[in-house]
Length: 224
Image (cartoon, rainbow, N blue to C red; front, side, top):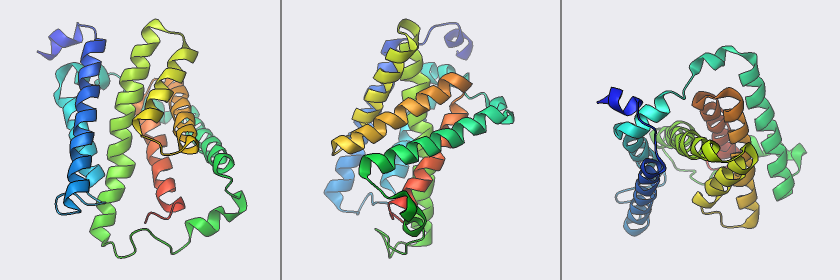
């Protein structure tokens, strides 16, 4: 069965099926979290269940699994260029976020080491589940969809600039930003991720970039 799909082209219809199921799962789990007030899904388990389900769909659905498995390319982790791109993108995004939100750069260390937390009574196991979801599952799911599928499909019939802008806009809209500033942040992140992917042709590198940024954001925003 897999050999048959390997000979076929991954179509926009198949891509849209994955996107539709992703949106549907996100809505279902969001409603479950809001309506049950933590009885079924809580702050630490919502993202875990949501992103785990999305990943399961992508990799159980044969067309998307075949399409994505060619894009991991872990060998690029042996190249210094990959790490320079990750570090450069992290620094650029941090500075751009500080500029967008007018955060003083000199207060970064104080914020990161602050004892403040949105969930001060959280148990260690709850924090671990939340970190796994935010720093591993979310990057795998989002990069597989937005860069591995959408951006790569856009490149088939559009130039690089249009593909980067469109995929980044879709990435920003998908996150339902509450303000123009947060929309700008997601958009810039999408541009950086797309550029890294185009340069390395590897989902692995942008997943690492995404995971590190999410980890930094969790502590910079005093979530944990």
